[in-house]
Length: 249
Image (tube, rainbow, N blue to C red):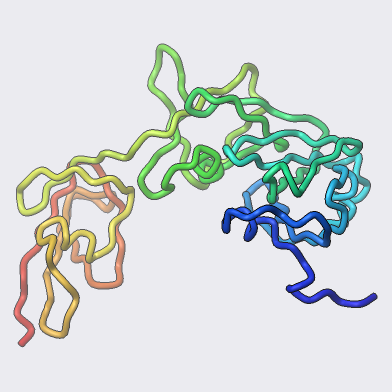
């Protein structure tokens, strides 16, 4: 079998990003992902492949043990059965997701219905599906009449629970104190320089630019702890930071 070079393969994602039409003959490069939204490239010759052709090209057999979804331009997932076709030239679809499962799970995120092909889904994946900055947003399970449940990035939420789950992406807002002044931060972790910039926004790393940073009332307890360049710290409501310029000259 002759190996194809990159010029012979139409990269659907590149064509769409460039705003040009996808050429009318293959082979085509598409992306196939898993339940962690980790993608790998896949080459397929047919411009109008069936779901079975996509799964077979990915060497996922037997195909009747897998569910295949198209990832639409709006981020929603659309089930593609083994006998159904999709037009790679017109649909604007360059990504697919494959799950080894026999049932789908429906949930809502920010009020939008979403179908998923695995029983469990991580908080990180929910953020990706919601299209939000994973560092600046949290995902909550909405619980009517009670406190909403935070779904951490590494949590694997069980979609097999009774009922249909509703999730919400919420911007992180944590009030801390920097040099005694209240500051709202929008991340669960901050680096040394991110903390410095809370007190001195124009500070720049340099040979004679150094700051002593300490914090207390964090996850580590109330004791005073040093934060140095290259380190990160987990943020907790009510933390106290002290940032002091130090002359290294």
